[in-house]
Image 1 (spheres, rainbow, N blue to C red):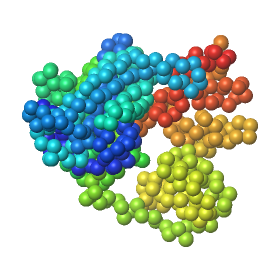
Image 2 (image 1 turned 90 degrees about the vertical axis):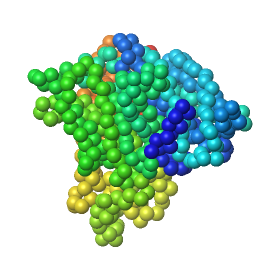
Image 3 (image 1 turned 60 degrees about the horizontal axis):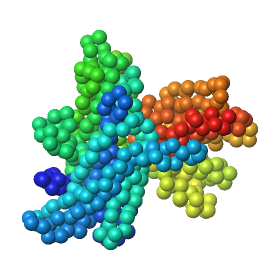
Image 4 (image 1 turned 30 degrees about the vertical axis):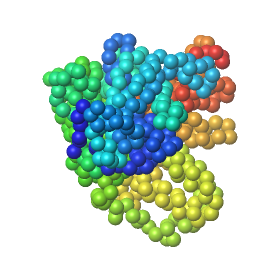
Length: 485
């Protein structure tokens, strides 16, 4: 049950700070260096605003128990100095380093409680700040002044779409919330479109917070409208490695095709086992084909809920009788290199540490089994699809003494699948040859773009820029391709 008053205090669940740090990999979490260092998570959402700017909402969740309080007139009060700034990349270097501030704010956040002895881990204060900025790629920098005077800094990339320039259907970012209620209070910091939306900056649900609320906006819906002026929206929850809806966690609705449609709802996630999931939006045409998609990662912590498929996901074949047990060393080595393309950071570290051949064989068996969408069948569809993309990359992008999957284009294809479209610029005057890959939707990213360029003139197209978090970024990539010509 959410407890919220003038203080904005929220108690969504009894998550420990350790769990929050371990799971919330896509949010900005300031480093903790002492027991009483303020615990703050920061997230954001981008929405259409006008022809030249987009609206960015910055969400902050501050751990109530991590603050230091002093006596106040009515109870206790804590003051937390926070600095926020948005930087745009203008560096001409290939790596592209943000060095131009476009917005900044220094604020003293004040929090009041009646009794500090009742504060528990998991209780958070929620704050939200709105700013309008031109579309583009930015870096959000945040700093907090700790009680001992140390300044703690963190940063994350922001991709702000140009919603006004989209002629086809497009989604805003998805705001994950703890509660959404109807409200006419325009003085409420969380008020928007007749609603009060309390964001969940940690993206964590489960114990004590069984309802996942969501808010999003859809634009330019004429592209999906039927003759009756309606469109079909599919909203559902899926597991992290699967695109299929989970039973009972999907909604299909026929809606009026407006220029802007507000999408609000919730899913009950109390029966989901602990893990990583995606909330997905899909606009369908009359042939039931996806026109545009958007997704948002979230996390569930339900230690009392056992996975209904746990038994089915046990290894179907004992290692000793599997093909992995006798896999030649050369094939094992190659298999590990292939696995690195999609491996998590933890799996990559395991690969680097393993030197024993049998351990490597067991790892490969486990690596593909945990990704098997249908463990009850003999086929591993995920692995088959992976190697189908790898073979396609080899056929199309092999160059000199490098196989196609080892090239930048091949790695992106193997990792994210075939792009929705490829825009070639092989003979543009004054520029190195380049091509732009566009994906309508990448899980957790939404619409994405990759730019590859033949920098040395030998036909090896290198990745110079991407809008995907964690990939190489170069905001002024077009200028760079002209400068180095």
